[in-house]
Length: 164
Image 1 (cartoon, helix red, strand yellow):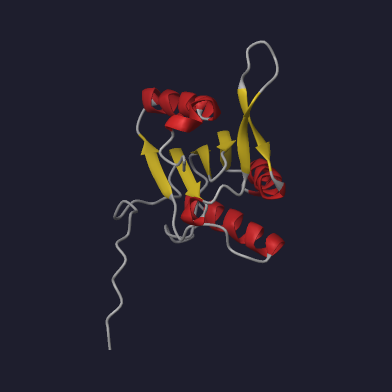
Image 2 (cartoon, rainbow, N blue to C red):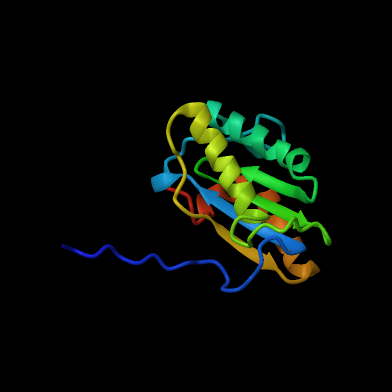
């Protein structure tokens, strides 16, 4: 019998993802399918690109907006829903740990909840198995990620997740 490959964890070993701090989170649609919307260029004189959402993108954005109310100790400071992935800049406030295990608290719980809500709503799992996060170490990293999120639609063709 062939042994299954052992998945390597991409989480920082020993890090408590319910710890106070700033996190940059990316959740991708399975196989890069552009299910959440498409980037269109506006008609205004500045022709600013924006995302025109599908029904999936509308629902995902609504769920992201609810995070601050569902998890009062977590705030999504900025986010963008792109055609095949989402980025969120989240803050976990100090002194709010609830005694849950590190793998089920904070960021992992938010991502798992977002994925399960969309799966329940649409009847299929559109997401890749895992997600990416970066623990932001200082204000400079926070500002870089904030600007990245805000400029993401305008730079879609240069994005790592852009599929030709």
